[in-house]
Image (tube, rainbow, N blue to C red; front, top):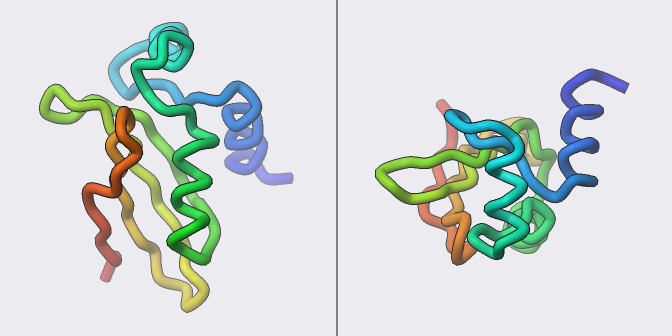
Length: 98
């Protein structure tokens, strides 16, 4: 099993992903207090709309807003960047890498 997959599985089991500029404890507290949707909820939304393999997931703060940034490899081999609002689960941005 490759390292990226092992890391993703660990975080899926924990139900959150660390913030880029904060520690894992802060991300865990945000999830536990209901301040953000869990990673499992975001991944469910992704799977409902997209067919492919998740390459990377990050929970970050951008412009004072918490977001999940995901990279997905679609069936045609194209990497798609997705940005979801971490509070509402709304898809904010979708961009195919060239």
